[in-house]
Length: 181
Image (cartoon, rainbow, N blue to C red):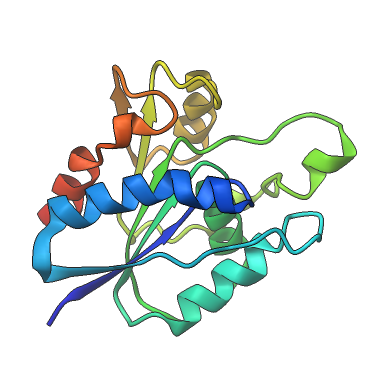
C-alpha cells in the first residue's frame, strides 16, 4: 500500500502553484512508487488568510490516516497554524515544513498569518516535525528559522547551504527524511 503525502504550496496564485510543482516533481521522483503525493491547488479566496486554514483543513480531512504533510513557504506557515489551532482527528505521519516564514509585525495584513502566542503547546510532540531552510533564501530570511527552533525545540531543523527559496527544486533531503521514518 502506498503512503500518502499532501503537499501545500506557497503563495496564493497559479504562478506560485506552478513554481512549487517542481518541488513536488522532485519529491515524487526521490520517493518513488511507495508514495503518492497529492498536490491540491489552494487559490486565494479573498479572505484575510487567503483561505488557507480552511483549505488545509479540508485537505487533511480528505487524506488517509497516517498522511504525511509537507508545506512550502506560506503553505508551511499556514499548515502549522492550522495544526496548532484545531483538534486533529486524523493520525498524522509527519510534518515537513520548508522555508516557513514566522510572521511578525503590526501591519493589518500580517495579523491573519500570525501564529497564536500559545501555538507550540498545541503541536503534538509525538508527530515527527521537520524544518528545512536554505541559508541563501531570497524571500524568507533564514534567520526566521531561529524563532521556530526556540518555540519547537523537539523538532528537527536542517540548514541547507544553497538552493534559495525554491531549494534548487531538489527535495532529496526531505525525501530521505520521509523514507527514514
